[in-house]
Length: 212
Length: 412
Image (cartoon, rainbow over all chains, first blue to last red; front, side, top):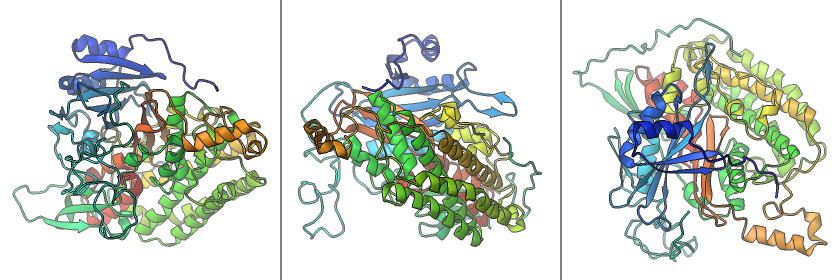
């Protein structure tokens, strides 16, 4: 085995976690460290306040909104289905001789249950969350309350279903000339129209429930 | 490193950011631009709401070349996934390969040996040059200057030839893979690279001579599309657009990957953050990339390019002839692949467009459970409406060109 790229540091309370804990005692659900990155699971109602705290605290200065993304843990999680991951960066830029930011990166996670898939939008804190939140809505069907423009972004307006959900089949969409015999899964997948009602094979992971 | 200093003159032809639009006047007109407009770089559609010729609102509509690469990645092994990343940003495919490989390597907990890292840096910088040359050619073409296009693309062609000499493919090389590279440089390749970087500054100087003092180019770019540092950070805009505002930041320096900390180069910054500054910053970056390539050639270490773990990198062809174990490793790797431990990894790199990286969730199987790209262009495009408001239609063309968008990366 070759060298370890990033040694796993000892688990200790990092400054971000400390600050969040002091300001909002019940906001943190869990903390995970992997290869030097910290991922903090935040209670859904607190995400806007926590982002605001990380951005405005002079010691933290998370000035750059890197992105947010969704993930569907259909097979793995019991109490919720989706996760929204916020990737924040304290960008250490130098301007006119002053250095801003600390160069630290933190990942915040929000668990989202399927039956109530609404997360408060953080566009009020970081305007850059506009497009990524729309993408998450488009791909996973997680809505963002308070978002200025909650529309689909990549798929067409009349598309049914959310393509990156784990139960949405790959290659199952209707094609322009369906008469042909060639093509991948078009003939094999029993689907009338791409949609959430689909109950078919979703790969070899089906029926297997593990925690990751 | 600051580019030249100059006075900021807001062109009088279009209205300044402080333009007043009567809110009670409902005589606005909606004009559709794209998706087949020649200066929208592919299939970007922008709906412009106009008051006279002044833009009140610009709404980008994207998704025309959405191919579901992120979904597709979930169904491929890590080895096969690399080939899909080429197709995302098709003018800088090696940078996409590198970002994907770095994230997978972080999951696996491995780093390639020094020669592999240096070779990667060399290839990535060549690719950055190619990406910037495509940008320069098409951007100036949009503004009505055709000559630059041919000269920029003839230089890019030389880079494509170098890639072809190494991999046999001009564009979609998939040459950077988890664990190292697909192969080492062939005989005579470094000499060809050296000839290229020796001749490159003269060619770039020629392009600059066509533009720097060109009154038409300056009129159309200076004072147009101004974005402040704060706006950039708020909107998630990174890369040359951010550096043009005067903020000195480069992921290669702030979070070095692939051994960039061993190289000596400067971060060019602009002054006002307008279209002209973005042009200056990118051109200055090309000279810096050349410096990095020269250092690579000078200090290229000897040794293997790949890690020695046969469970991650296939054995060399010669070993297959006389080692049963090598055959088994080869077969297992190409059919099943490797299994990174359960976890999540994100390694940002400085692509030609800005911060770019892959967020990969591993569930311990041979395929990513979730693979998401942080697309630099997608985030940079968010600035479009802010940049266009209060400007005229002709400026939209200059602004779209200056934020350097590749629709393949926006739509994925």
